Length: 215
Length: 127
Image 1 (cartoon, one colour):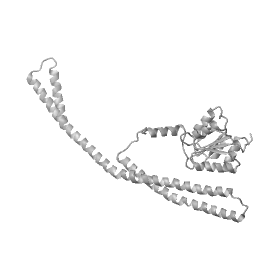
Image 2 (tube, one colour):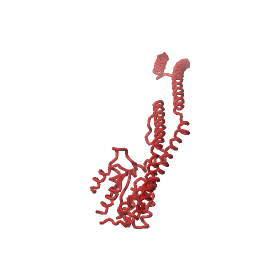
Image 3 (tube, each protein chain N blue to C red):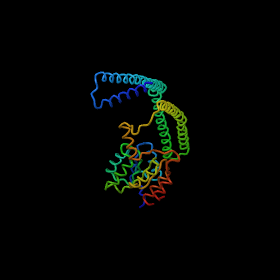
Image 4 (cartoon, rainbow over the protein chains, first blue to last red):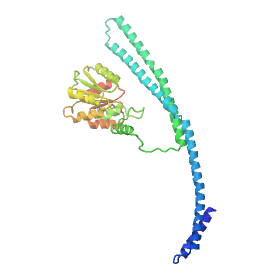
């Protein structure tokens, strides 16, 4: 309806311009043209209001959805509780494996250095050290449980990030790294710091030996 | 060239436990004179102070990696001929190719055993 009226006004203004190409318009004609222009602007503004309102409504709805999704994300819970707890578990794992390795190595070194001259005391030493090795190996059960807790946290983060990314239709932006991350990434790439590979992904000693063509 | 079991060996690794393991394995196969360094730059300092018969180095260390140490050693006229074995968990083909190109004498993939260490040392010295 508004569009038809606008088209009609435009047509009338076009005709007026053509008719007055070679002659000066009088005051009444100028006023008529001004009235037509004002009426067209009124229709345009009315349509603008409706469009702007609709768009603002959409933005408001989107912000509401985002707010609700951010709430579900539970950023504070992750930042203040779950991620620090996972870090503490990993620290405890490192400490436990270090302690166990030390105990095992100390026992093995003591066995290697032991003199078997006195059979009775040698046997007692072997028993003691072997028992110490068995005890130290129990770290694996506890670290296994700690690893399970860390994995659970990672799965939770993965699920929440995934849900949030879907909700906001997130797209990855290439090269979005801070200076520290960029420096580390560049160092990793230039110095080939690939780290240990999973089973079946890396090469084995035989492959390396073939590359060297040596025993 | 026969293996000289009295030669000083420099073991470079940022994990004390790994140094301890390598030291014990070396002892098992007859090498007692073992020094240690926690990264490439500390190793380079030691190499410039004392003549070593062999360097056994990890790859991934900070601030200077074993790969950078290898390149520094090969670029230094006085150290260039020092035998160098890389012992690392870096098990990608590109790592081995790069180390070979930089002049490494042999390459051991972690985890490894005393027999592998012995056979690589023997190979480096042509035994």
